[in-house]
Amino acid sequence: MSTLIVAAVQYDIQWLDKQANFTTLENMLGEFFMDNKSVDLLLLPETFSTGFYIDDKRARKSEESVEDVRWLKCIAMEYNCVVAGSVFVKQGDKKVNRFYWVSADGSVVYYDKRHLFRLGKEGNFVVSGSERKIVEINGIRILPQVCYDLRFPVWARNKQDYDLMVNVANWPDTRRNVWDTLLKARAMENQAFVIGVNRVGPDGEGRAHSGGTCFVDFVGDCLVSADDNQQQIISVELDFSALEKFKKDFPVFLDADEFELS
Image (cartoon, rainbow, N blue to C red; front, side, top):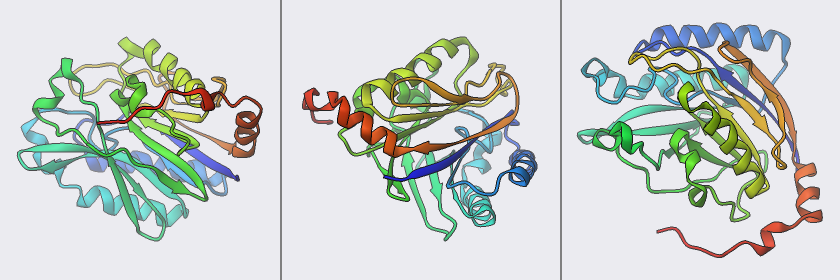
């Protein structure tokens, strides 16, 4: 197995203002890449171009994803890496929360968020995804997840088909302890690296977000984390040979229960 250089962007998403968010990201990335030659994977938070709105009539035009995908392709080409982040995309009379993965050659794959936040009535406006997907970069197998997915370990269970789990979110500060705890739990129980990418700042409905963007290794230790309440890009080079050795020396996955997802 090889290494993977990953960068994660934590920032204050402006409510329903794509151009403002694109400009903020471009400025942050320009400064970051002045000091960093390259990355393999660049991660953005959930609904990175609009914020996490559920039902806002002003946002209907935002559900046309052509502009988002075009911007992602430009960034991927400019920095020669895979760029990944989620946006809302119109689907029938509702929408999906689509986690795009865009390569420098213009190819696009995506994962649609599976678990919808019942208490926030998300299911009234968003269609649940049905397919668990694996994305591969440089031979590294990656499981994409979005926000609330983090609470559901069966959906995230490693069937020895991934090495890295990525969760992008708009996770509120009121439940920050859950975020911090579950990122580590998912890493330890699945013997995989885990990356959580969250936003900062208040959203358009007054919900506060303190961040918590971090890289967790396969034993649950935090390798690097962003400062709370700060816009920041963090990066790390993940060594998957260390993961391979750990699993060989401590193969708890061999005792895992068999199951099937419906």
